[in-house]
Length: 211
Image (tube, rainbow, N blue to C red; front, top):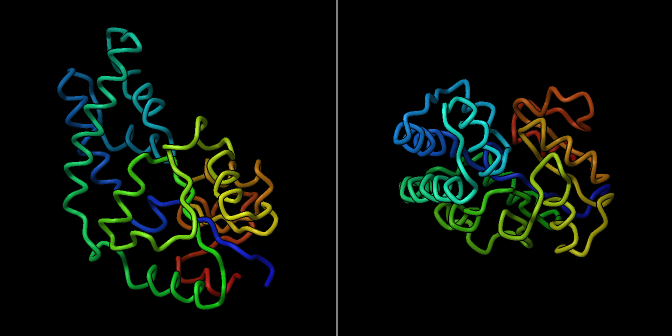
């Protein structure tokens, strides 16, 4: 086997919570009278919560102190977590579950590398609580992608070198992070168009053909 482990981004790869993020940011932005739409929302993919807030506040006519910004980010997260309660194992596609099971059967270690602080809650809602060998998420990192920290920590938790791990991503910043950390990568969606992606894929299921 070329790799011993596969590290997955969560949102946009294992599942899709974009609509919940959008609804939560929109409610928060509407509350302070700041314009927010789907185009601005697209800029938030793969970006940390506070960095996302800064992007939204570009449209604001007033400036916010750090403490107030933290309150707004926390408010958005509470709305988001309530929306996440709607998620269930039905939100995990057969294609994703079957591919994960196939990789596990072949002896690969599986990990999550996501900047979301809600990673464990989302996995639980999907019925994947305890499924992964390691989880590196927003609770244990200080730098968001394109910094490679989240993937380096995942590899460390697995006891593996980056060369032994394949990163699976959907965002361009995620591929940048993989490259910066010395990882090979498989890209779906927008990440498949990255000039430095190792394996561009049309579907998640194609992963079982790449490793």
